[in-house]
Amino acid sequence: MTDTGHQLDGVALTRDGTALACQQRGEGYPLILLAGQANNHHWWDGVREDFHATHSSITLDYRGTGASDKPQGPYSTQQFAEDVIAVLDGLGIEHADVYGTSMGGRVAQWIAARHPDRVRRLVLGCTSPGGPHAVERDASVRRTLAQADPQAVRRALTDLMYTPAWLAAHPGPYTTLGDPDMPPHARRGHLQASNGHDAWDALPLITAPTLILHGGQDRLTPPDNAPLLAARIPDSRTHLFPGARHAYFEECRTEARALVAAFLNEGS
Image 1 (cartoon, rainbow, N blue to C red):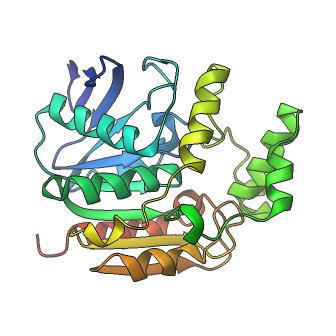
Image 2 (tube, rainbow, N blue to C red):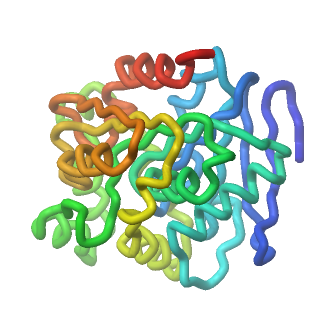
């Protein structure tokens, strides 16, 4: 690990020997921030410091992304969850708050269900339980994202992430549109992991108080998934951001920051 002031960069090893790059910033109670599918830790650029008044933020590059190893698959959200536990173990962290968005929210579900003793509070953003009970994106979105032209896909993904008004005021660059340096096998592995997620039966095992957040106009992961999660997770509450799309945590940053900070600091 390399420690520079309140910044710590290092590598954690998983049980199968995969090296995972991890990053810790700030001081305070540990908060794990989990990015979306096919993204590295830069997903949280410009947002993570919002929590540093009370928390240290911890991110990682999923296997297949960033500076982490990129082994052949198969990949799964369960495996990613165990990778996060390996990062916590490598940093010597016994307990943490966990905030996962998109595929990171799927990963967070497994962490909280399988390792309840490691999770103090849980935030699930723009995510779903997966499997046959989930509300899937419509066929037109799937077709758009399956185009052969990578620039067309990038434009479509930008539109799914942000409203036109926000894009006009924030010309980029955007850090939520995928890791451009992922090899094809890893990109396919992330897609298979996200599509194969099904935590429906495990959700009632979550014991951590849970905050579920979602953009009201999210077409990438429809907001009807939020009440499904809330009905399955015992101690949970839900908040929708009207008009927001998938990247509510950026577009509604001020409101989201206040909600998450208040939730994480309840009773502390």
